[in-house]
Image (cartoon, rainbow, N blue to C red):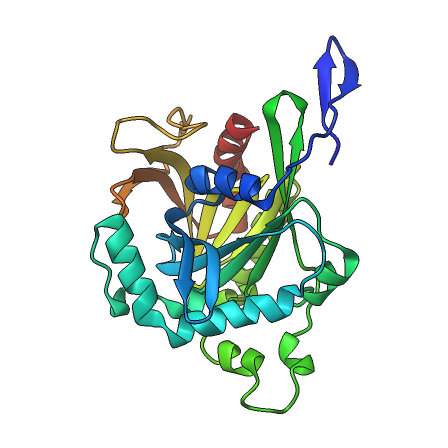
Length: 319
């Protein structure tokens, strides 16, 4: 990714800088975990069993733990390391809960956690072709993010997204004791097809049309969780879609309000809704962070134009 400075329509390339050490990347990410990934930072260099995990984070939206690893260089296997880390998590659940409770001062219980949504995030200045291809499956519980540093203190973060429809279980062999099969039996990477399987043919058509219009917006991508689909702009979710029996339940993100009263970047509270189809929903995370959504349903194709008018206001606010 090349960045340019726009000065009166004249573009000047912004020169790339470099991270000297993995620790430099780690310190930057840990200090901005919520801003970059929407995660609650728990601890650094967490030792469990025979491993030492770079960063441990918690996904409050999906009630799951996330391991974040930082890399410089190519002498490691993303698949081997990722499945090993998830395996040690699933075999030492109590240690992860204890670490969270001790470091945050809050009380998390085993039943509070959705272990099926566990995942590993790898962050590196670059990944080689072999590493990218090794996770190019529809159901690997890993994310690859490339981080780049530029002069002037600028930082860019870009996810390498899989475009495969193949399952990694096809190459994991027949041994039921393999690490991949053991992890896959408990960690479930959600699919859009599973979430939309209960839609009527008419509502499925509405979703496909709505999704198509959302993804036509520049720099947007789709992210699927166990309970909803998020549409992201440059990696940040701006609308969530949940699938109900008779409607698509949509939530435009307003933003977060922190304990000190500060609001998240690009907080959005100026929605123009002349038809008054939206409501507002408030929520509070375990960390004390508060947030809100503009909510609205979609039931038919003839509602799409107005709903996209609402969504584009948030999109333009972010961009």
